[in-house]
Length: 600
Image 1 (spheres, one colour):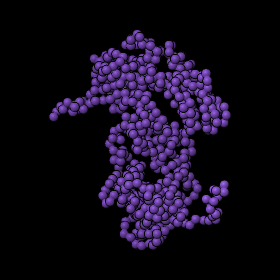
Image 2 (tube, helix red, strand yellow):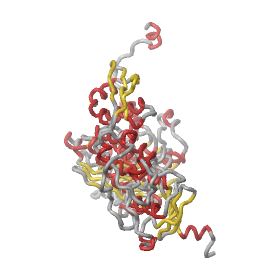
Image 3 (cartoon, helix red, strand yellow):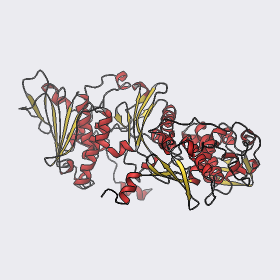
Image 4 (tube, helix red, strand yellow):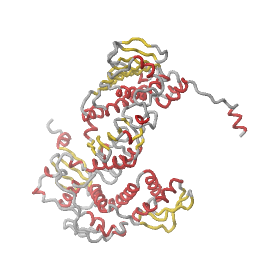
């Protein structure tokens, strides 16, 4: 202890920090890089009612940032007040703070930016004869020439805190962040025009336009072509936007935009809800693309969580999580083959269920007797058994002579290739289907429908798996014992820091059951029990479907191939297998012509 005290030195007196140091500390929370300045200044411009906003940058925003707008402007006598900490026109009471409808409200941004840069404001209100310019450092007011609106100039960012400046990246990197900050605003406000200039050259321009056109302009044609519209109105919420197709998933999470009441946010609950919707259609660590707008009563969301206003807290986070997840699942459910054509089938399930020879081995327990098996279709060989018997039951397509390729989204079967692929012809050209992957999805979706609300059979362990646990994991295991039993898990607390796993889902033998238990406990702690049960069931059913689907090198007749194609057309999420791999690909006649140089 004496050694520690000797390093600490003599006791220092408690004292109030000088205003300049307080402002610089506050600036460290609000101003991380030039893009932070751009975000705050564009927020202010939007709150002022601007219809056109111009952002002008030098050296990626490090040397100079100018944001000009045509909003309402600031009266000359209010300009000095605008630079004071916690001075704002946007709220004046606790009730207004709890019902924020503006982008800004904390009254910190201008003061924080001024503390770490050379800042000046030129503004003119509608009733003023001319603009006034305020220099933040000297406090001097002087006449200026500009129309109604405001111009904020920020020069030499972090000049007064050289250590902060060293942490900035290259000018090109900082410029990219600034451009992205403006893009985020542009996506939320298609009624406002935005331009971005760098070193005197026009870098980006988004003119006022309908939302669909703004999305096209800001995110590109590829995003529109590989995404699907999403709309939902659960109680107290409105969810809209576009959600990317699994095939268009990216290596990085750099095309994910979420807005709450027009404010761009990062929220783990929403991100998890969206990720859950993609759970069995994304391959590996691929990242989906999406643009999501959530409208909710301001009183039901707290935006005063973080100085940068990038985080929010919902009064009922689980409700929002579930609403987002279900909206995304519904949007993703429609097979891509049916997007541009009317549905030719309604989903059906086999009408006659009797017995399932392999139900014990599949771990279905009591649910197995409810599933049963349909009468064997004469199209399938008499040697088919088990899960294949259960789930290869499809209504055979009419003979090919009665239907042409144009009548079916996935066309009519032509041949089988390499014992793995089905080749089919539709009106666009050639369709190539991975028969195992496609049938795996069909099996999986039918199992999900048949096993909803079923209890999963548990397999007791002869020797319990004992593992260290956190206090939170032990508390969750004790509080959610009944829920865990529904998915075949029996967890007992041996001490405040040790759990014993006494049973696991019977059909998942051989895996890392302790890791599974920890994953389920984490899910139960953060999200509702219904979702944790559903995810565990789906993991089980996915494994069953993979083993139950038709295997490679099995020869199929043309009728069997057509039956599988028709089943794909009426199965949700049929574009990917349970592991997120594609089930089919289209090769158009135009692409074939190009490969064979026809017409050249």
